[in-house]
Length: 168
Image (cartoon, rainbow, N blue to C red; front, side):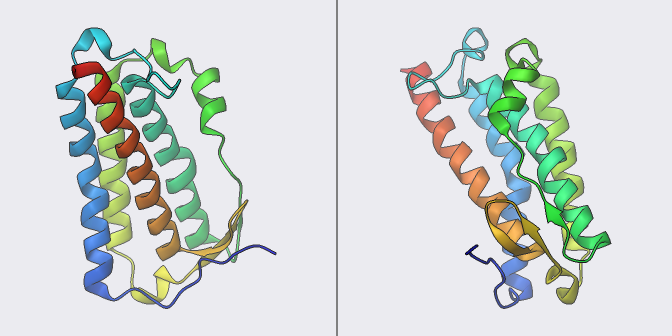
């Protein structure tokens, strides 16, 4: 049986706090990028994890093809099926290592800002709209925001480790 992410509505100020954390992610990513010498932007983590460039491209693509697409479908449809997005497959297919870090950072920042503005404009009852996310089950828009924060946190942890390896 699928677990559910349908919870009681998040109070307005708590939701605003979550949106502020989402909005801060592009700047946090840019700060980490500034710490890493440009000659190492495409160096992968010692554990085989993404390089800085791969992280930025992945965050950009997931923002567009997963989070924004899911939000728009949840707002437009009744309980849409929300497919999983295979980030590793995207990285391979799009050859992230050949992409420009600066452009990926800029697009991620622009799309994230747009998405945060869209989320901020929603009324509490709109944030309760739901879809069925593959591998997760029923999820509300508020649950989607929680997934975005979780995803950001995972990448920030990985980026911290990568930065530590590359700047020692």
